[in-house]
Length: 107
Image (cartoon, rainbow, N blue to C red; front, side):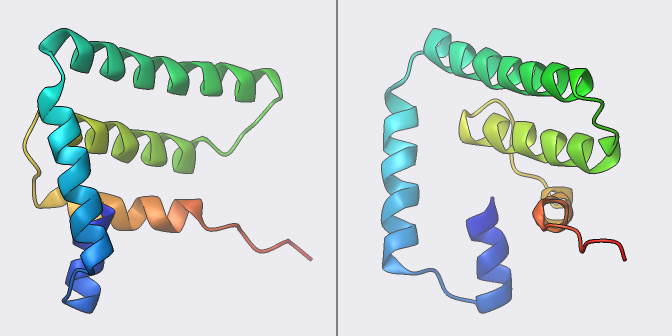
């Protein structure tokens, strides 16, 4: 998804990006439905574990976390062929990028 966002911004996909996307698509195509489902469940589980650990440490900035999580899970859904890429995915990917940027320290 981020490669597509880069294409919007720069208008050209590098040979490396093209090769990487083709390699990932070929590998995903070889997976069975059960294997794709296992990957999907593991990704969800990883986010659940991460959330639990953050809650235990009194993390309190949940809006960016939830936005980042939602976009990451949608990205996996598309990659695994569970759903189609939709126009709003680009805006969500932009929000994910802004969430991932470190915040400036408060004075």
